[in-house]
Amino acid sequence: MKKGIEISGAIFAADGDVDHDDFLDKFIEFVEANGWEFGGGSKQIDEEGNDIKSN
Image (cartoon, rainbow, N blue to C red; front, side, top):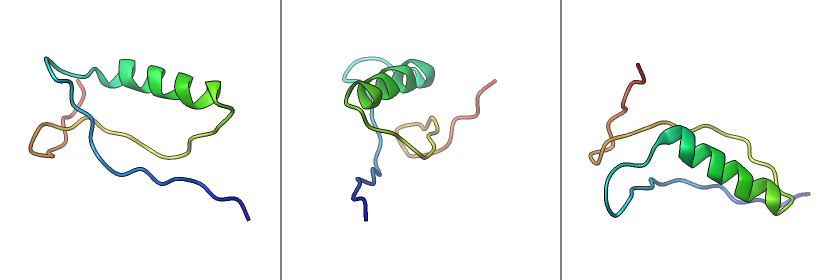
């Protein structure tokens, strides 16, 4: 049986906003550089945890 990590949380920049696409590109690059795989989803939220709908 394989063991993995489940991630639940939010990421915010210390200054300004985090671009969703930019974050995903960097995250997937990090995951793949370590020979790992990611399965799941992501969404952009505000500081109160509310979904931000993309245009």
